Length: 362
Image (cartoon, rainbow, N blue to C red):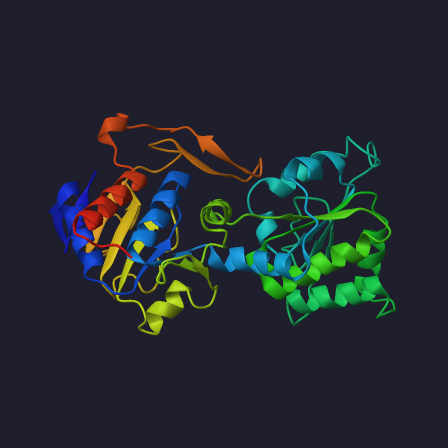
């Protein structure tokens, strides 16, 4: 595995030592990114506890849009398999659900289980790209965007608005479902939009059966949520500065902390691809990134260490969006033997061990 210290090539041992020195000298470090396998996430939480650092996943906007709706009123959710097997009416909200193969897979099948078995499946979209390749009924979003549109749709569904508007027709189609599903991306609709959608689903369930199929972010955010919950009892944005995990989604937002000058060092963890943060390199930073990524270069950060990519060069437990669980992913292209491949968990553990040897402990 390649490593760099202050732009110069180094071996991993030297890079681990430099990373430990950098973190030992910091007063308010942050661990960000967290786009990695479960073992690396676990090691990151242990390192943060030792340092008294805070953690913030790159998936934060998606995670907190969904968690905000859950905390406000709960959620009625279903799975991909149940959607394909049971739903006779599906509302696709926004653009993101059209990425990938999900909608095509739904469109290619008909309900085969439950009350709707054998009936024709109706695909509806709100504010989507009006993809002509898949037969569906498209409803345009209001000029104010998805959140305003969802508010209007819920008002028509509740009977607070009436008339011949397109949303009145859409509401009637939703109430006609035997088993309905709304597919959406929490980050795309935002916290208010997600709360509005869950409210609409509760309204629909007064007379029929309706559920949400929320899309997971591509950066292991749902794995981070589960690991953080079983490790700290809190959502992922937590800090250990006062010797115990404290959750605060605003206070421990890494971009805000760094912009405000609150943090004086950072560790960016991305063994899986993740969007590079604007602050990377603006303060003393360690980058632990997947081999072959764009960030695998000496100029990325003060200390850069490349590691195996889970699901590609190494195996690892990852969020499986199809199954809706954390599952082990075998290496699809193991270029080296396990002994020759550094893992993010191994590097983080070595950094933590060096810090403990140096007497650093929260």
